[in-house]
Image (tube, rainbow, N blue to C red; front, side, top):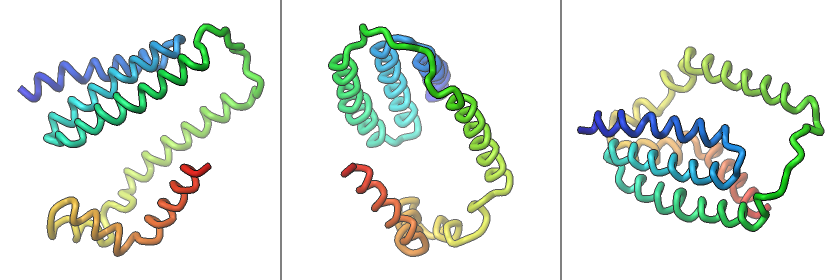
Length: 158
C-alpha cells in the first residue's frame, strides 16, 4: 500500500513544484507550494516520521504559507512588474554559480567526502540515530555547530 501511495503522491509533488516555478501569479505559486508541502508530509508519513509530517503541515503549510499569502496580498499582486533586468550579468552569473554548485556536489558525492572516515560512522553503530547525531554534534563538531548557531541568531536579529 505504501508503494501505491508513493507512486500517486510523487508525480503530484514533482508536478506541483514545476508548476510553482513556472507560475506567473504569485498567489497561485504560493498555493502550489502549499500543495507541495502537503505531499512532503505524506512522504514523511510513509517513512513513519509522523511528528515531522505534523510539523510540516502545521508549521510550513499552515503558519509560514499563511504569512506568505498575507504578505503577497498586502503588497498587491495586481501590479504589473517590469520584466526587463537591470543587472544584465546577474542571470549568467547565477547559471554559472548553479552549475558550479552542482559540479561540487557531484564531486563531493563521488569522492565520498565525510562519509567514509571520521567518528560519525563509529557513533552510528553504537546507538540510535538521535544519540549518534547528538554525540557527533556535541563532541567532534562543537565549533561548527556553535558558529552556525551564532550565524542563525545574527540572521534572525537582522
